[in-house]
Length: 180
Image (cartoon, rainbow, N blue to C red; front, side):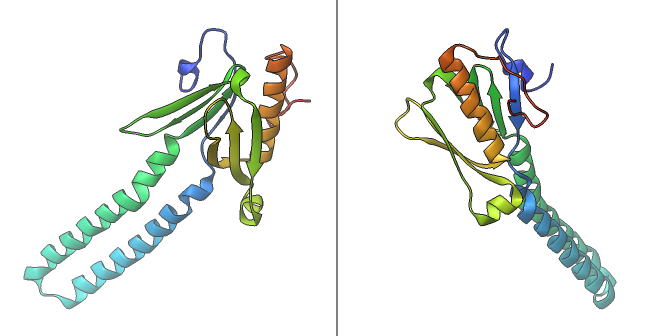
């Protein structure tokens, strides 16, 4: 059994598991392309224009700078994206994030009082948005970059409504995770 199934309680059913939208990876990919081009250009320039005695040290410096930039601006955001989970079960909403410091929040369906979504023009074009969940906590919880936020909103709303009426886990889900 893999994640997130291993965090479920006995008898709890997984309804939806998503990572943030891929738009979070746009700038790391741009950074990868630009850094690779710059490192290649610098390496070629060093190989042509410098003496053999200084060439190795300069090429190693370019390589080290390139690897630091990749680790900081590319690998770290990708690992962060991959380790962020938005999960809906028939009993609760779970959010897990972090690599070294793992953070999580669980919201029982019975405690959710309101579900909203927000997305601007750019988010609508990409099919993403912010999901806002109001529960018994003081402040509403906002989760950015949820893919297909309107469908997730509808799914969560129906799940909360079913829990309130005592029909949790009933209904037929369609192929996009919504109810028919």
